[in-house]
Image 1 (cartoon, rainbow, N blue to C red):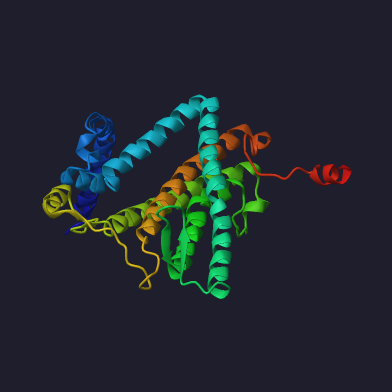
Image 2 (image 1 turned 180 degrees about the vertical axis):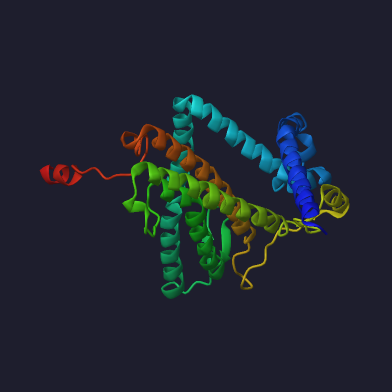
Length: 309
C-alpha cells in the first residue's frame, strides 16, 4: 500500500470519527427529551425491560454526551456571565460541604460502636448485640464488627470532595508553588480536564456494572448492547449480594458498590466545580483567590472568651 493510500485512509477514519462525534452532540437534546418525556421506560422497575434500560443508559455514551453537553453549556454561559458561573461554583461546593459535614459523623459512630463491641465482648461476654424496642435489631457481634468497614467507606467516599474543598488532601508540590498565580490556575484546569474528570468517569464506568452484577441476574456486562440486555431481561430476577466474610458477619456488601458509584459521581461533579473556580480565578486575578470559599475555621477568639468566663 502506498503512502498516499495510508494518508487517505487515516483521513477517512478521522473524518468518520469527527462526524460521529458531531452527530452524538446533535442527538443530545433528542435523547434528553426522550428520557424526560418517557420516564416509565427506564424508571418503572416493575417492568424488567425498564431495569435493563436503566442499567444500560447509566453507563452509556448517550449519558456521557448529555452530561458533557450540559457542562459545556453552563461553561459557555459562565464565560458570558461570571456571576452565574460563581453561583454554580458556590452551589456545587456547597453540596460537597453539606454532604461531607453530615457524613463525617460516621467516624464518630464508628468509634462509639467499636467501644460498645469491646464492652459487650470483654465485660458482658455477650455473643450478640440487640438494638431497639419491641422488635429489636439483633445481630451477632461479628456482624457489627464487620459493619465498621461501612462507616469507614462512607467517610472516604462521601467526604472526599468535602476534604478537597477544605484543602485537606496531601499534595506533592514540585513546580506549583514556584509559578505565577495565573499559571497555577491553568495547571488546576488542566488537572481537572486530563486527570480528575477522566479518572472519575473510568471509575464510574467500571463501578456501575460492578454494582449491577451484584444486584441482578443474568449479570449485565459493559460490552452488552441494549438489545442484548433487553433479551436478558426475560430471565431477570433480583439477586442482591448478602454474603459476608464470616457466617454471621455483615451481609450488606453491595452497599460498598453503591458508595463506589456515588464517590465517582461526586468526584466528577467537583472536578467540574474546581475547573469553573480555577477559570474564574484565572480571569479575575489574585484578588479572587478563595472567593466565596466556605472553609471550616475555629473561632480565634474562643480561647479568650472561655478565659474571660
